[in-house]
Length: 99
Image (cartoon, rainbow, N blue to C red; front, side, top):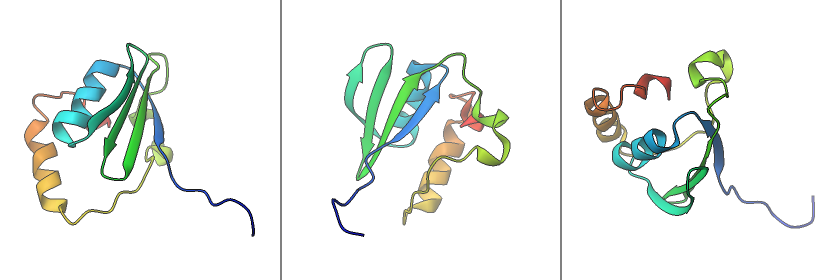
């Protein structure tokens, strides 16, 4: 196919608690804030991966989506360190199992 190429830009997620979810992505997963629309949207980035979190308190929780609870695939050579960081933060982020 000819024409302009497309590159991945961002995964867009509807979240119930924007502040809590933003803190989780920053503090636990190592993202940083790229942009913000206070109270409604947070644009986060880590390396070449971008995530846009949108405040949607009425949306289904990820745990209710069943087979469609995944939203992206990320490759890393730091699997053990990332898993340990997430596991170590579960007590601080009580909804971590719903991510």
